[in-house]
Image (cartoon, rainbow, N blue to C red):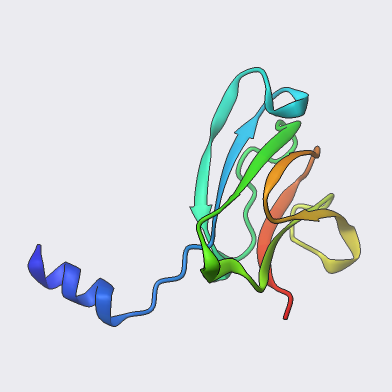
Length: 103
């Protein structure tokens, strides 16, 4: 256990965002689940096509140059951006999402 802690401290693990995903608009209704991650996790399809909204929560200054990008396609195609957000409830019926560095 101690060696795992040392490895985590020595490697820069950046987890800038938490998404709480909901089936209803305005972040209401059934909670579908949560996702915590950053750029390293790449394109995500978690609850794509089912979710109607998500609460985007910043985990601190590590995400100052990042944002969550939602797409209408399931492959995070830049031509299919619906919206971006970095801190609030967003009504979005997405097929995929990713964290992008926007600096």
